[in-house]
Amino acid sequence: MEAATGAELATVSGFVGRVDVLQVIADRLARRLEDQLRRGGPVKDSVGWLIGKGLPQRQECGDKLCDDRMLLDSGRDCPRCEGRQASSRARRLAVAAAVDTAMPYASETERRTATEQQLHDAGAAHTAADTGARWGPRDHFACGRRNGYRPGRRLPRRLAGRRLLTNSLY
Image 1 (cartoon, rainbow, N blue to C red):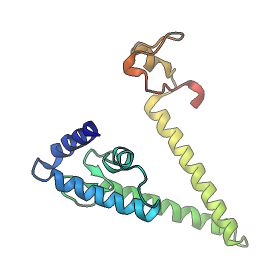
Image 2 (cartoon, rainbow, N blue to C red):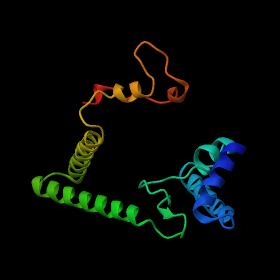
Image 3 (cartoon, helix red, strand yellow):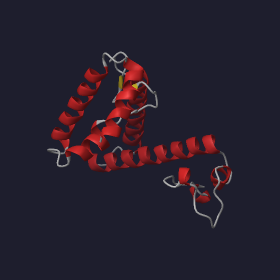
């Protein structure tokens, strides 16, 4: 618990400074506790909740300053998260309009199901394209080999907790 708290304090103080770090962490914990009480009920294991949900930074967009769609250094809404949300909303509206056009006599439930399925398929295709663009069509064990992994041998300690990707993705 002490190590997790110290690590998060050090990370956040690097963004906001030593003076504001306690207020930023306190605000984060208050927001997350409010969300927990609204969505999941009371916290049953306070230490586990703090380490797993309360303290860790949640970067929704990958920006190192983003935490729960807010910028740590200024407290403003994260522009990257807003852009992603607007893009997602526009995609959902476009798919729903296409489904409404293609299925004019379907019930609301059928149109909603078709919309969700098309959004799911489009998201899966986007994820596959993104993975292919990053990794390319190569043997994913090559990444492990560079780090000391050989089939039939134990993983080095620095890789022991990681999951190595396989060609089963393609």
